[in-house]
Amino acid sequence: MRIALINENSQAAKNELIFNTLNKVATKYGHVVDNYGMFGPDDKSLTYVQNGLLAGILINSGAADFIVTGCGTGGGAMLACNSFPKVLCGLIIEPSDAYLFGQINDGNAISMPYAKGFGWGAELNLENVYENLFKAPFGGGYPKERVVPEQRNKKILDGVKEITHTPMIDILKKIDRQFLLDTIDRESFKKLFFANAKDKEIVAFIKEVLGM
Image 1 (cartoon, rainbow, N blue to C red):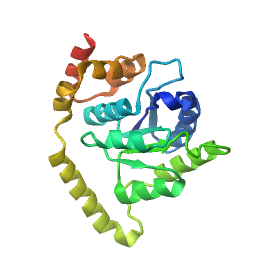
Image 2 (image 1 turned 90 degrees about the vertical axis):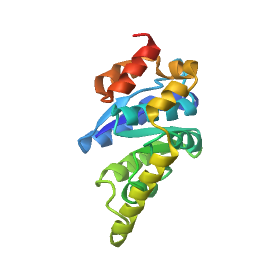
Image 3 (image 1 turned 120 degrees about the horizontal axis):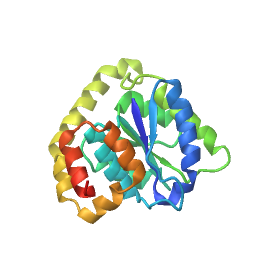
Image 4 (image 1 turned 120 degrees about the vertical axis):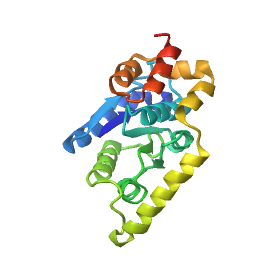
């Protein structure tokens, strides 16, 4: 699985800590982590709304299979992610949240609070969250005897999102062009996105916006 890490401006200083912790756990389970930044407060700014837009682009283009993002409380980035098609994002605060989200909801993105409650031992909570998220295949159910209805509900939710969301390419064509350009005109995005994206229509449009 290819995991994309995206941090926004208020918590950019924690990017290295988050990446190192996530990468330590993810690689143990055979996953690859791509760090899209922000890499620090001096990096080109990303808001939590832009985090959601990036998540939508990466998931819908096939450039990433899973998104790890967040903001001060985690709530804003979660809402932004869920506003885009095919992105199912949960607010994860503690390890049990991570395990239950993976097993019951079988989502493809998590948002975490990197300011609220992020104190002494925060890196231990991060590691335990990632461990509980990735240690078992998603969608296994909890409790196990509930796996059939939980999987059924996940398929229903996916179907609802297909109806309530327009295709990502249509969103990209309608969204404010400067807002989109400010989101994607970053060296980390261009390097990782073009190396891994699979949807030719989205790739072509992104190149057009970037003037490539």
